[in-house]
Image 1 (spheres, each protein chain N blue to C red):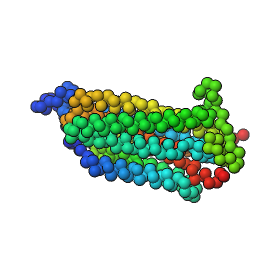
Image 2: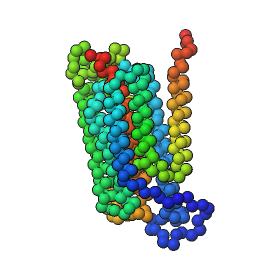
Image 3: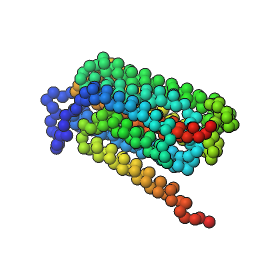
Image 4: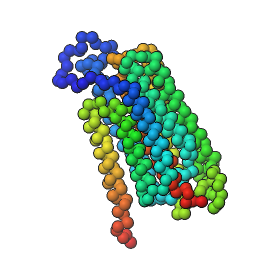
Length: 250
Length: 98
């Protein structure tokens, strides 16, 4: 990082260089640092919800296992793959901008957006499944209170709620509050991310970026990867913990 | 310090590692490990996966010490949040109230 106060700009000044930075490298690093500080606040924000999940799962393990097993593992798994793949295409978009291959960079950005939309579409299908199974907690949807049909022993209808001994419907509802709060917040971040990437695609299309200047794409990428990391934790915590108990339920 | 350009080969390797981790965590979830080990295995895999994303996709491995410090501070505060809250909730039953 450049030392001391800058008095003169580089001889060949890039048009995107703001006057309070000594050079493009300093500007790029300052931007990345700012994004990381913002991501710290995001880590604390999601951290609070992960903490709530931890405490209630510790308190009501059976109800959380029963509720978790009702989630669609296949759709959750496909979404995990889509999101990780989108992180890869995002990283490639940054690479292609760094080496000045604009067309490839735009293709990668568009792929990232499409994969993000795929994720949201699948999430919408999952939310709708929960709606038809009356698993939307509380009175979130007027006239559609939380009212799942509880399966009797031997009943294998997967639309019904299969309770484990020790689990109550009330505590299953608690799981679904946490599920909708966390995945809903995550989906909101995805929507914001897709908005950011759409802006980046338009800017790239207009030829605003190149090997010397690509900080906005890199910083949007940091945000996108962060949202991916949140899902890397949400997927096992919400969908997987409790699967090993399925055999004990009958 | 000039900018480091990460080769696509690295990105592909990390992508494949993340896919492998996803597969592993699903397979492990159906095995009945003793005690709380299922949660430990799932979280270990998640931590490894997110570390790979942070170091390579987010370029932290090639970033300045200042960025490392910011991330370390975030994790430290997160540890305080969890440690103090859990120490409260897990010890409430120690005192007989009423």
